[in-house]
Image 1: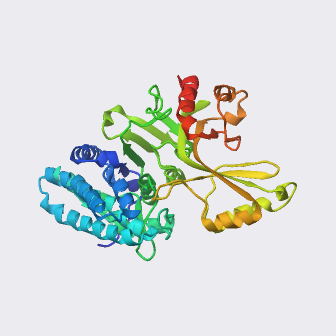
Image 2 (image 1 turned 180 degrees about the vertical axis):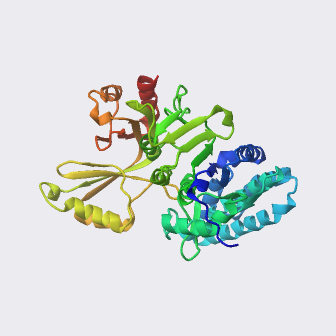
Image 3 (image 1 turned 90 degrees about the vertical axis):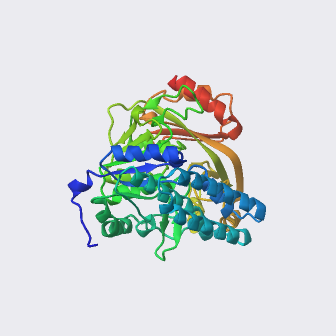
Length: 459
């Protein structure tokens, strides 16, 4: 097929839709999501996650399960999830062979990781969740009368070779998409995978847990789409997670800046990197519930009609605080430069930073495929220990208030700190951005602090 190049105006008519794991959990959920696609004629590219719960099973297998009986039990659960969807298809034979081939591949990889695991093997294994779900979802669309095709996103989603948390290469993704994918969008609905990609050697990579949103945004950017839709299990973004505060209220419209802060500081409805490609191309993002699309959702745009002082509250668990102390830091040049040189050398991404005369505290956040608490690589720990005293504290939660002009409004934080007077705060970051105030607390206190703050500020 010769390349077909859409005009910018044509591309602006295209909607890219992403459906999360709960939106493709089983046959009923997939059918609901397929109806959303069919009812939106502009939706031409659909990226989906693995069926709900599948990635967790695959990650457990990737971590190495030596017990043959337990490994077999996990494989039985995987087969049951996908075969239950097959059982409800009108023509299951169309995809049953492909599903079973992939499941056999998972079993073989799981046996390998039981002997010796690696980040590369982990990515090969966990990628199968999306490869499986896309076969089923495409077939459901076809049985509903849509002209849909399944596409392997690894053909165009080019990344580096950092397995577990690969970095995408937007220019190469754009070039490959124009050559290979755009022609299909002319007259078909293309169903593909979120979360996964491939490096220059064709090896499977992943963008880290929750990376399906990011994949969809990268593809929307690559085709200059008019809209990006993120379909999940809640009708948009709320002032906080309703499971934390039952009186949390929906947010109908929010700016890119505020939504980016929310995603970065723990609002699970969006992957932290999702909005970066959308901002680069000024693509409006809609977040809604596939279970109740009639309820509407949240629009994320460059500019909004209202910008309140406090917009939302977010939590991010599983935080690690590293404190580096040295008397050589006092009135000295170059100490921080050496610290960050070591961190960069060992590819340690720093999140929050706070300094005093003789110490610097910083946080790490876990975003790779494997899960678990973030830790300093041994080489980085050894190099830093030669420079200063290194203290590591875990079991922490980051609580963030997101809003507008917070550091520029007199008295804006008095209510916050009055509410927190009973608790010990491990770190406070305020003033670097007008959109957030955040602090670390012990995980055991995080829920009550969040509930009290939400009650005082939003209720």
